[in-house]
Length: 324
Ligand code: KIV
Image 1 (cartoon, rainbow, N blue to C red):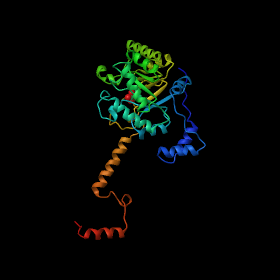
Image 2 (cartoon, rainbow, N blue to C red):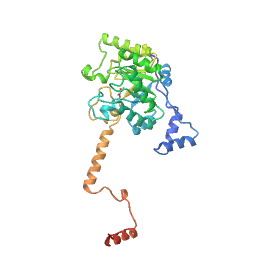
Image 3 (tube, helix red, strand yellow):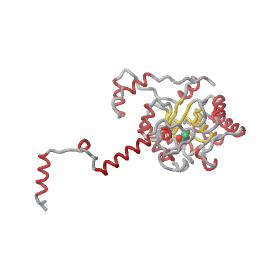
Image 4 (cartoon, rainbow, N blue to C red):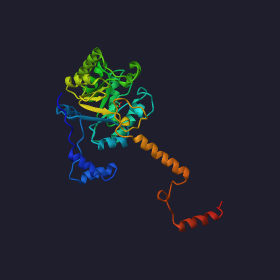
């Protein structure tokens, strides 16, 4: 394993972000225009591949709308994934299977309006690529043409190799995804750790190698033993991005709603909760509820006024019978 020191914060990026005067994209551009500091450089597919070569750890985070995508961008995350986890954490399904291309395109285009700097990856939902490379090509093209994505992600091993090759040959960069592939949750019998036997681990390693050979530029390793992920990472020249796959992957990804405590009490073992925003939201909503019921909101500060003269004129007008 090459050593992967922490990436030093990019001073130009921090400075540009710190000088943002308001939350609108317009103001952000204006501040870049007037400042001596250039806007942070867009992360590209070759940049992500080069990070492995340079021993730099890659950060990836999901987001599904413009508001959170903007925060992911501001935090300096390298890759923004519009994951089909959308189905669970935003749309309220029990798993990702029901998610459609239209759902993904709608949310991916919102995310791309919020984030410009990270590499933007759209997740191909269940049924959008399994029917063959041509369907996959048509659907993947929607992510680039309609949603502003830079690349797509596809779950699966050797059975997706032809599809990956077709997309890459036609100019669409592909992130692969092996290990726990949530679109197969029914077949797998639940969200279970994969590749725990020598035989299953060997199969996964062979899949990963085949996906690299087919042209994938990176690969997500989900819920597999850390030692297996380390072997895959060593064998591939493309970056591995782990979720529940240990420290030796080239990068790490988490689902935003797990990180922020926005997905109820469900927390997979691998998901670290860095904040409990859900509790804060609930307490704010309770305060609103209590103030409305008590008649203390809205107060003068949150209400509009009119002059006494206008009010008198209104009252006098109302006192006169209306002409028919
Ligand atoms: O859909 C998703 O969010 C994902 C990540 C967990 C990698 O596939």
